[in-house]
Amino acid sequence: MDTYQNKGHIDWFVLLPIAALMLFSSSFVYSASAVKSALDFGASDALLWKHILRIGLGIFFMITFAKIDYHVWEKLAKPIIFIAITLLGWVLVGGKTYNGATRWLDFGLFNVQPSEFAKFALVIYLAALIKSKKNVIKDLEKGFLPLLTWIAIICGLIAMQPNFSTMFVIFIIAFMMLFIGNTNIMHIVATGSVGLVLAAFYAISADYRMQRLLSFFGMNDPATAAANENYQLDQALIALGNGGLTGLGPGQNRQSNFLPEPYGDFIFSIIGEEYGFIGLFIILLVFVWILWRGFKIAKNAPDDFGYFLAAGIVLTFGVYVFVNAGVNTGLLPTTGVPMPFISYGGTAVLFNAAAIGMLLNVSAQSNVYPNKK
Image (cartoon, rainbow, N blue to C red; front, side, top):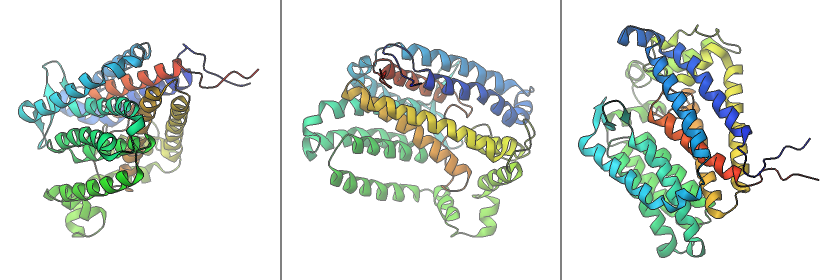
């Protein structure tokens, strides 16, 4: 039987897998955070209940945004990008500093990480701008440079926090959007090359980033690396090794006692320890399904803005999943990039859910699978 998405209906083939990941993440977060939660808050489930609250709000956001006509975001694209720039500027002068980085705004009851908002604000604005400049998109002055300006502003402000990993990931996502937007490939290659060189200089401008890169390429003192720069990766690989094919079982992980914040950026390795290669394979398979379905939604979007918005959202999640899995398995240098819908988090959970809601609305306004008679 041919499945199809009726116009006006939520795409359950996206909503249900996302909701399942969010709900199952509660179990993953509890296993990874129980020890730290007990030590820091006196209760092993303290972080769990915070996460459950955010998951509940996230599902509410997802359903709510799925009901908002996505064309609204095209009209609000410029105010949204200006709000993102304002928040990124605000965090630099009045933000909350943690572990040497100023990335959060403290609103009392909750903290907001403006970079999480900014990445989707940029996706929305680029989608609107690429559509509006469709006829001059290959022109350097009229098409490419205006797009590049906004990318540079957002990435520059995030780099100043400093937050190299998020800045670099957003840079990659933005240039992928430029590529699918049919901008001049030579403009992309030339500017992207310059951007990568600047990113490389920025990466080595701080000693801790330099040591991470040297450690990743095996070019520093092994003894020092084992004690410092390689520590997180070593523990993650031990966790994955412990898990083997089928895992140690739910709640039976050992490395959460050694990994710093194992419920965040390194929750992928804890899941591998408890559920093994099979568990990780299933999770990645779910993500592949969501990404495939998302690109199908983009392809069948009713208009150009819907196409670029849906594609930008899907690319964002795809890059984040790839980077997080790559870091946990040692394929990429250690960075602070969470696994979407699974890692413990605050604003990331809500903004990710809202973005999926936008994707669902694009789907609701197009026939993803035409009904074959």
